Length: 564
Image 1: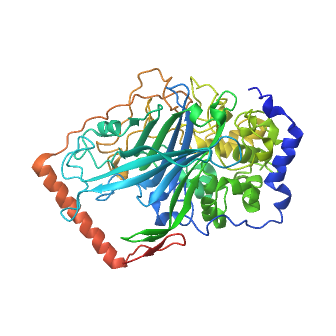
Image 2: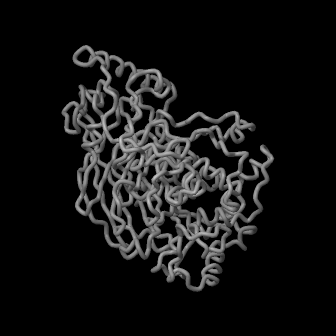
Image 3: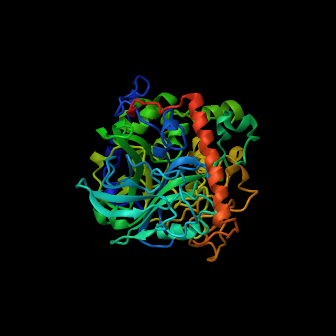
């Protein structure tokens, strides 16, 4: 990859400015910098202390990749609300109507959004006082009268700090997948919720299979202390709430020119009113309560005392936070691996990790990775004096789409993969484990951890067309492999060249977008009667549990709930 002439000027000056911005000299004596509002919830699958109280705003994963089937377009996929059990009725999993969901893009390297996309959701609840059911019969379309609870959303956008403008209003949300009897052809509902806007934008909001794949037993002293606890996909069978957006390069590249300025940095956030009153009004102004750029940063880099503050802070404060920068330059995980598996931890400070997570991969940052890949410093029109190291998911829009994607991304020789953006099928757990033990420094994988977590691909196949994520699962997690009704893998029809996925061996697993396997379930009056009885028992049990525990909504620092 070549270096832009404009971005190659005065490399020594750039390097000094970047190192100064990182505040390396202050790390050993610095204390925790005050990060924005005094509290927040978390992102990335419940990894911060306050997240369990408010899953609807928990941003689990963020993906950014060049659209494999649409040249000149970039796709963003952001997920919220982890561990959605498909049988979690009767209310299931709506987006929060008192929150706003954001995807933000920094194209000039100042750690501030230059393009911002904002979603606001609204409920249409026709249940009123007559029923508790999500639907009272089979749902065959988004406007089916049997679908009693629906959501719509407004999408707004802002460019270069200008006021937000509405792009679409009252766009439909794909509902939670209740099951085969209630939604016999969920693929049709997905298609109806996928829209194209003026300017070529594609949009989608609704439920999907959780595309993240990993074995979370890493927290049991790194897979049991002997790598015996690997190979189980912890999130298999669970769903998430997904927002997907596809826009042309020119809408997010600096000065609209991806040729001169190919690199963007991306992160997603959720914002809520500082004070919420149950059944009443909102007040106090918006506060950021969730944030996510690169995967697993808050889980395995940020210490517990800093997690909630990290989620409340904007990226522009990252380099001013000595405690955070220190955890990047002196990470905990390599020390744990050394103590358990006797794999020597690389020497600190880890400037290679600072390059991957804070500056982007570039020779202009003075780090050990000798490549110019995905730092905004490589944009021809970027002013080096304004560049601010920050935790962002950075993507070079001009790297060609790989014919045979490798799940290990850049470490596997596939420059289009993570950490150059993130595709749905990138194995970020294995990539980050390798990076933490020094693979990015040497350019060679560490053989002792070659098998990683033993989970190399998602349990469901991704589709070859927008929004690319798999259909949501439709049966209970603990029976997903025993009963019909789960989203089945979709057959390949294109030789594996246009889809977003790769298999365990690095080969493409592109799939066609389309229907799931039809399943015959009891419908009609008798089936509905059974459904009503079961749902009634479920509601009764939940009410009894609530009385037994005296459960009420707990307040958090940012969310002072007042019961009226």
